[in-house]
Image 1 (cartoon, rainbow, N blue to C red):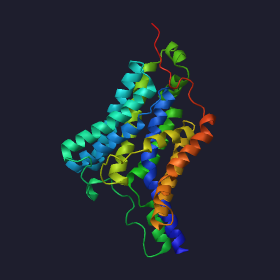
Image 2 (tube, helix red, strand yellow; image 1 turned 180 degrees about the vertical axis):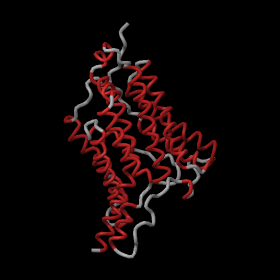
Image 3 (tube, rainbow, N blue to C red; image 1 turned 120 degrees about the vertical axis):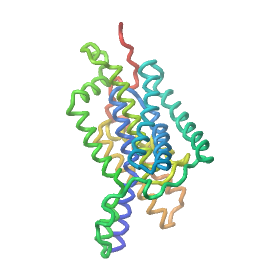
Image 4 (cartoon, one colour; image 1 turned 120 degrees about the horizontal axis):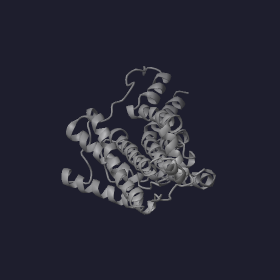
Length: 314
């Protein structure tokens, strides 16, 4: 029984540890997709956010400011994507793909200039996002260890679930959310009513980059303790898959990210037992992603104008 509780606690801990980066990025993707702009560049925006967050924290030892600097770095690349797709009517898929090449290149270039390596210096405990509820639960019993393993997690874990509530409220309880979703469905009708379609889309893509940057920063400042070129590989695309799985809704994306976080948790637990090939274990999150896409892509309601540039009539 004690071993079962311990294993279950470790799985829940790793699930909650690996979910925030995916969920931050998925919430960002929800903003972009619901406004009518495809953002394939989520991966690149996460990468630059991961680098900036770790770097600023290394030099300042101010983790929260560094965390939000990571978000701002993602927003800068979100603005580049928005400028290309919303203002210049560039192909949204090609622009997003370019961001995915540009952002990691910029991150590695700056890392080599600042650290003489493609990796940043490992962060100390004080430079990372703080742990919440650490030391609150007793460790002299199986249940105490279970509660400690489950709930003594980084602050970003709790922050991202609050962010889900905030984004849900913005989407479905505010005038801006209604207009944003309308721009993703019928931009011409919105323009006729005097809604600034291009402005809303531009802001939504920038917000998408900001949240993706927070997701990247949470990787290097919580899940890990430094930036590496492989820190984000695949996570941006998994976040996009989670949005499709969640039918482009923040609450749906949350459950999908928990599923993918669980897959990552199982990967850690199974990898520690050395009973299955490490290569097969590493495939788990990506295999689940492919299965989800095959099963749910055709069933999700994609915003009608998603991926279609809107050219304002004169």
